[in-house]
Amino acid sequence: MARLQGTLLPLAVVVLLLAVAVAAAPSERPPKAQGPKDPQPPRNDKHKPKPKPMKVKCHDRKLYPYCSGKPMECPADCPQSCFADCNSCKAVCVCSVPGACGDPRFIGGDGNAFYFHGRRDADFCVVSDRDLHINAHFIGKRGADGMSRDFTWIQAIAVLFDGGHRLYVGARKAAAWDDDVDSLEIILDGEPVSIPQEADATWTSAAVPALHVTRTKAANGVLVALDGKFTIRANAVPITEEESRVHRYGVTSDDCFAHLDLAFKFDALTADVHGVVGQTYRADYVNRFDVKASMPTMGGDSNFATSGLFAADCAVARYAAAPGRRDGDGVAKAW
Image (cartoon, rainbow, N blue to C red):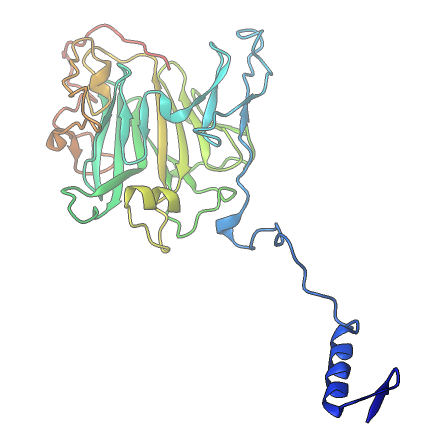
């Protein structure tokens, strides 16, 4: 029997005391870390940090002496899709000026917004005038249960101008989106247009010296301009997981539905211009949309449908009008 301060202890008590002593002894293993977990996000694309808002600026010091060279950060609504409005000296979202974005939401020349859903895998004339015609190719997928229409987006545009030149601007199909990989494809009269992949890089056509294409960012953004005729901003963008969830697009992992966000500026439209957007520039255009509707939608698909992306044969076509046709005075519009 053990003895503690002159007292004999039962064997069971001795064993218990030894067990307690072993448990209380320092361990060779450090205790598990407590407190907050590692703040580093998992290494996958879903948790990549959001890119910082893009900065834009005006370059013409003579025209805009007080604004030229001043960096302007894109608004929170369009951190990677804005341009510098040099007249007001502020950054403006591409999708807040006349053009088309998303599940096609158009802004007309009159400043009013409306939707034109068209049909997936079909082509529609957006603008048709005496010497300018723009068609859009729609892609899409079947709408959610209970919907009477498909979801659609503009994947590419075809621009016919100066009596025969044909310009294509489109977004290449992609399964997964990487904004650093250029998904824009530009073709003039059947020849691919190659531009260095860096912001402000510019290409000028040898065949059409008045035609310029400038990258608004290193990838997926261009400004196409034909002097005295038009300026088109085109950004290639995907359908994000969040957009798909909110709008029930049901986008799957094999196709991010890359499409174009577009902004238009026309310098010399005639009073007879037509097309989904073109008609909104007419002096006699009357907006008949229900101002209380959450999604004012323009119908009349049959009036704007064409037989192909480069076909100027929609019912309201004005391009290459027959000699002797009377057209109204020129109309100039700005952003």
